[in-house]
Image (cartoon, rainbow over all chains, first blue to last red):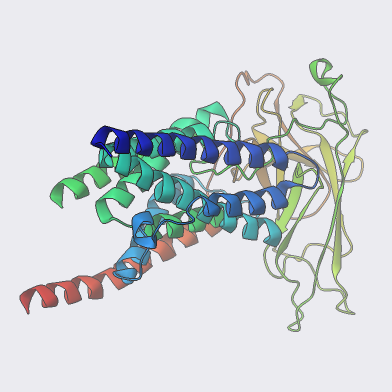
Length: 187
Length: 234
């Protein structure tokens, strides 16, 4: 098989994966607006996003037990950065109800596995690390267009860029998962 | 490695700048984004308006005799009360404290204040303990000017301003109350409240999370760095 055919296959798979990720994200947001569906849509959406990584070796996703202390520590550092602008201006607020907190963890893990795991890996395979960071950030931002007011999208994009840059620089997904979970549970 | 660190630093800086430009900063869309449910909808929302919903919850009394911390939300998420341990006086029989939230259609004349949310009346089966408070959070419509403060009245009035402690999510406003009554978000009628948005202030839980995260990074990072240096030297 020629190199161009292999590359063409990688591009097709990547495009299909991006469409699937967007489809799952939009579906879970729309389903969450139905009465009584908020928690269920987050749980099912998080699970569906995780399933996109099926068949990929953990190392390709940036997962692994080597350097685990460094990875977890990186997650705490990333969480501190993600929450810093809100913490400086914090005035208190209601905490997430337990069922919504569990659902928030599911969707945080699912989003990281889908965007910085499976999609990042597919983009890196098709076009290299720069495309992986920028492409996964672009799709991540588009995926949040339904759930966030437009004014928040630059911050969403910047968060995606930060987590994607960590994924590339440290070849690690554990840090972004830890950071995303802490940030979602804190706000 | 240096280039990677530099890019990571740039990405972190860019994020902080972008998140600073919109309050509260990090937000992952768990807040309600559905159209605001009005008791008395403004004319432009009359056709599509759904009635607001009440809320009901309880706070158990721990074996230590202190009322547990918790939150109660209305079913549509538009109003909530959150409290720390011991915020309510524990009933003598240690039965749970019952908290109710109800949107109301009639209330005292707000005078020189414009209401930007429904008026919600909060009741509890046991009063707030002396020296304690409850955080009242109200969401508001993203289609109209934002309130600048939370206002409260007891019994038949008058309204009084309890301030604004900030927001945990977009399109919400919070105030601390030392007694329960009826609450609404509003702003002085004379004020030029031209744009909807979020007001923010200073508080507790999130800064603790940040402090713990930084402490973990520093405390665990030092031995990690020493181990790494030793393995390099060795």
